[in-house]
Image (cartoon, rainbow over all chains, first blue to last red; front, top):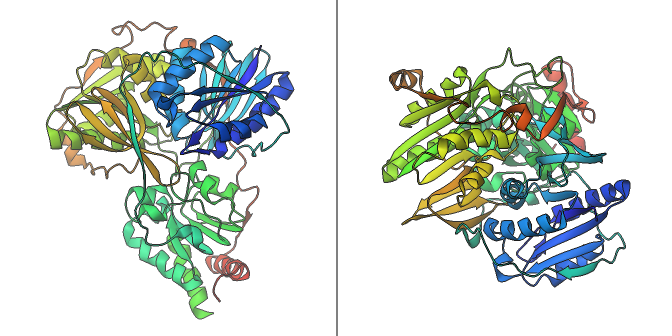
Length: 323
Length: 263
């Protein structure tokens, strides 16, 4: 039977949001193409997660083994290679996440399925798969067609589809026997590490003034701090600023940093890669300043200023000092 | 300890006005500047640091035409010892697997402990090449690496996960890793530094020499049968503040005040 596989993602007992976003996409593709949606769940003692998946899937396949408790490429690859080769799904959806990005490329080699990564939209048409993704730093969209194949593989960009939630389905769960582990490479999961105590909690701030690459050099940061003080804001940043250690990692907004939802978010010199947008797009009011009128940040901002933050900020700060 | 790093030259796009070519298949590259892919720059720096700490030899590889020598020269100036150019136009329409096969042709004959690539390239952003290469070589691997600690015959590797969390994994050597930005602070390369390495000969090879056929690389081997590029409409949602700098700042100040900023 032709169908759509969603590889369920979970960590430390919690199902990840991307799983329900993929179930949303999977269910709409299934409806359009008269297919079914199968959630594939690898893990150890995943009863609670199974229940949630049953409500938004037509079938749930479960493999339960201690080796699958935490994501590990060695065991996930061995398990999924077998399942995909045996069941030949039409499409395998995997999250474009730290786990999915690690898993999908080798899995595509092992199964021979053409892979399109970091997709924002996917369509099954006739015997091909069409996908939309971003290239050149998010400034260009690419519409791709893939060569005909029995099975396609796609990694789905987080935040592109709403949560499927409870679709009123009640899928049956089938347990898949644990295979003999072969082709292992000796990778061992050791532990999760969360960051040490932080100087400030940017997620708790009402107003954030966030700086990006456009700040140019660390010597310009005090100017932004002065502006933040003048309007009662906390200073946060995008990835390049944290990478360069101009501000601590605890100030970073985005997928690998913090998700924030302040009343006002002022993005200064931030181009707005999707990883950044995912961390701030739900702010009540977003004001963006950027020299590049084509910067993706303007697609999520409510107010935009095309200009150099180094010129704008001193003038804007004065407005509050004089008020 | 020997380290191999695969690097890519990419167009600098963050400050450029991009235009799409007539066929709609690519951007117009004529007026663009080219540079080493940001992730790869961190990978080269990490390789050189590992060499400095543990001894050994760093080899950098790229694939493209002879203009791509610049990224190899830059890597040599950062401290790499040897550079290999796969001089081949045939990869122009390759997918990630095609690029990985090209690199595999060279890397399979090298002796190394660690193979590094960047997590992804800023142009195509597939995030696939390093891991497909690892799979073709049958190596243990880890992606999104933000820290490497060397042990006896193994490495402890820190992977970046979501929400300010990391994962610690152990890999036996030889192993492949894809490097995330922020793992280190790449050293600055001066023009003088690049001049100093000008006498190092760059080894060249091509698809013929590597026994790669057209149906493995290039458009024929690619899983992508067509690609149409479009510039997305940006700023549709944003109200753009215009006028003199003073006007703009008055408007912005009013918005900040209305939405709850300090008066």
